[in-house]
Image (cartoon, rainbow, N blue to C red; front, side, top):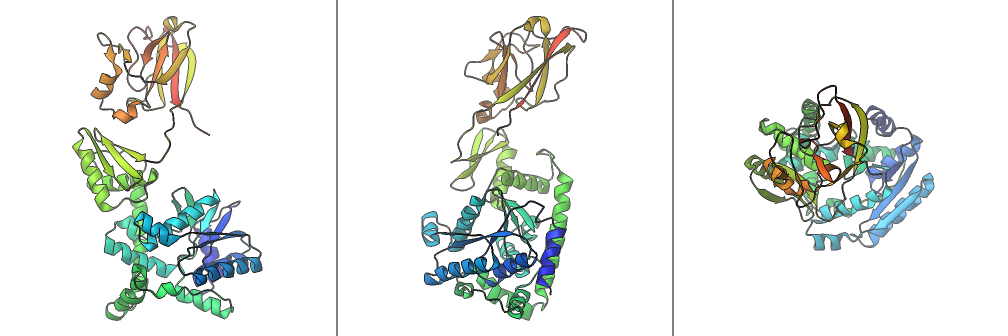
Length: 431
């Protein structure tokens, strides 16, 4: 196999490195990442080499760092390194050594801003991932394996070597007489992935199917394609309790990851759906020690416990006209929203917007007497936490509109020929 050509085709086929992309290559010093770096160099793809010293193997870890720095200098690549005490992180967080190392790497890579992070996962990593996820329990998305390009916790990650086997990598390095570092811990079967690599896969090849790796990769390809088709089928559809359970699971998982959830396993998804189906009161599901989902009146809200709260901000557009415009928003507080008001009643008074406050009242059009906004929100089953972010529109000190609900009594336009003031409200973009 021509490793360089295979990587070049993967980059082109999957759009891994668009023009102008800054690439950071994660290089451990092992055969896989060293091969990826040599291929990038041969393809004239400029990269910054990033190496994280996990400090798990003492002087050997330091030697890995020195090796990668020398290789970077030899190939003319900028080099950035850092150290992480993975054992200490594992002890304080309760994570396994493998998961603590993964978290440390993500923290390290996130420091490169908008750069694309290139990882050297290969075809055998895919096969091992399939078996690990199968053993834990996973759906089509998980069993489809690692994608060529992925957005993960704000980072753009690419994997240009997913069609190359480890044996091909080693042969290519040997043919070119390129050195690499061997990590002795890769033979340590206390780590689950190593047991799959050295015990489970050979057993399956000997006892079940000598081509098991190829078969699994083919199955993963089918699952990825079918998973993509199902995602496109759902599109941007809103969560609907009447949807089939399979669709609800998929939409909830997508919603969780879109909000930055670090994981969304089967049990978590099932319990959150159950809370949403119940639809009464307020319940909380703890995803982990930093993230949770609050379900109020069947509606989920994602909370990051250590994230600073942002004050809501809105933009008003005011335009003179005639008649009234129908508000396309039918959900209280959902933006953008539009409303029309009697121009004579508005006069030259300013129209203002602010968050709702305790004790706010209005007389909705068509209603008798004033009502507390709190009671209106309760009737519409608006979760308590969401009420703080709902704007109210005022004129002459009176609440004249709750977007997505109604305007106030006495402010309506007199027929389709009456002079009016059209108001549009939308969320102000930050940054």
